[in-house]
Length: 235
Length: 242
Ligand SMILES: Nc1ncnc2c1ncn2[C@@H]1O[C@H](COP(=O)(O)OP(=O)(O)OP(=O)(O)O)[C@@H](O)[C@H]1O
Ligand SMILES: [Mg+2]
Image (cartoon, rainbow over all chains, first blue to last red):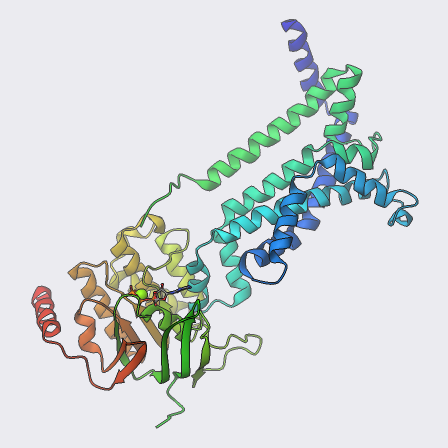
């Protein structure tokens, strides 16, 4: 059995290193769809997180709890929702986005945004009020003071972005339902792994799994260096 | 009396409430470039709150606080009061980064000639004796070093009005003297000062006005605060210096 594993791993590596067309097309689709979803949602979500953390308005409580709820909805349910929206008789049926990358991006945006909003709200709520006051009183205009805050919070904000990105990059349910797992069009890493495993073609599944594993290692080690050797210190 | 060349901040009929309880109220206060004011009051009487109001960092429950005679800022900046009188927190906040980063952060805000600024930063490092700490992370400084860095940061900006909230509370005598020198120099350059301090220190002898918060009112008197132990301490400090 161990020999079987070894040869599967060998096959997986050779698929990756020989730039196998199918494997790299799947990787490419996964990253471009998820990057697009992340890029579109990033700024509005951080802005909403900022507003929720710093302002008091009617309905703030409601929005906060809704965002928290959306965060814990399973991705298949979001897939179902987007499917119903995009299906020919659906509200957005005229867009003809079902089983396209655009449809997948829409679904992933709905998964990504609540994570970004909730985590950035938590990050902004944790900031020391004096950071804002100090920047302002030293003469920094408010838009730049927002930037100064984001710099002070770079680690928790980056954590939020990474958490959101890894959630959409690895989700199966929504991509499967909305994208349809069409080779060279909407087949991404998680849907391909699910399919290949069910067919018993483990080499490709392992190759794609390795890509996610390596990515997770890179992201977490980068974050580790970013955090530096900082330890909490009392004053 | 109202000299248009002198920058000042004027508070009229200001009242401050927290959770329905009144902290203080005052009819009229003016803080101008020519003033060196000593602000006194018990713990919790509202000294820090008053300074934050004058800095434009929080809003008074009632009344108005306005700035007069300041240079017009750029038309796209509608800042109002914020940034007119620089407020130094009782426990200063230092930005995440090195000591040097915190100093250059301040320098970038003072929109002056680059060369002069570099010189001013160097002077600040010299005066606050931060040279050996430049590359240290600001979060690892001691309490007194933090206050010295915050003071140097304000000194670089050379503000028109400066409010110091207990600037020497964590400092030993040598550090207090360093800060005193910086404050004196700012005063000579035309900065108006508002100081709060519990212990009488060398700072109090600089003051020419006295604000005193008692019974939820702010009493203003034009004479320097006189107090026998203060004079005593000041003499002690001078001896220490020599
Ligand atoms: N944001 C706030 N919300 C509610 N109460 C506040 C707030 N800020 C200050 N207070 C209250 O106002 C009072 C005055 O606080 P402040 O910090 O101005 O006192 P202080 O005179 O500076 O005292 P100290 O000498 O200890 O520095 C305190 O009782 C404090 O609890
Ligand atoms: Mg105080």
